[in-house]
Amino acid sequence: MYRTATLVSTAALLLAIAAHGRAFAQQGAVDPAALPDAEGKAILTRVCAECHDLQAVVVKRLTQRQWRDITTDMASRSARIDAAEIPTLIEYLAQNVGHVNVNKATEAELKTYGGFSPAEATAIIAARSQGQTFETLDALKALPGIDVKTLDARKDRIAFK
Ligand code: HEC
Image (cartoon, rainbow, N blue to C red; front, side, top):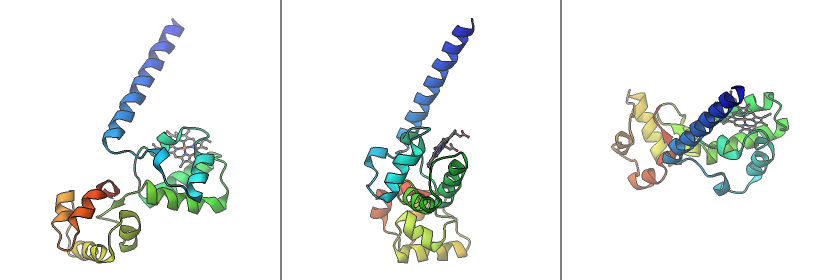
């Protein structure tokens, strides 16, 4: 009886995980194997794969602030990371598994994590200061000065809320 219940709940969990993986795959989740080599990747691989696999870490793009919160949280769960390594890892994740909220990011964040040119970042900030918000990629494309072609290529790095 107990055993059947355990089997059923294990099966349900596996199904939930499979469904989860598919949902993120459709949103263009990041493949950990494709992440560029750098000091940040070495830290990520050594520290963050200890309790869960890396696919679970890079399953969705987050802002620099969210990566900072998560990394701090994981460090407090006794992840084996040196204090000096934390900023390197946060920057690595923000740049390679990151996105920016075009309605909230600072000009510097738009450039660093969203890949916007200085002129584009300035145009976005100016539009926002006049009360404009962007709900969709098309709305952003309609802003004068935005390079529509490069925007399509990095749409995964752009969030609207
Ligand atoms: C000591 C074990 C441990 C280590 C090491 C660890 N994690 Fe976690 N991680 C967890 C646990 C436990 C959860 C599930 C937390 C929850 O659901 O509240 C989790 C969940 C996550 C999540 C999903 C969070 C969410 O809100 O959905 C992310 C992202 C994550 N970890 C990133 C990292 C990163 C980045 C590192 C490396 C700095 C790391 N983890 C190292 C234990 C660990």
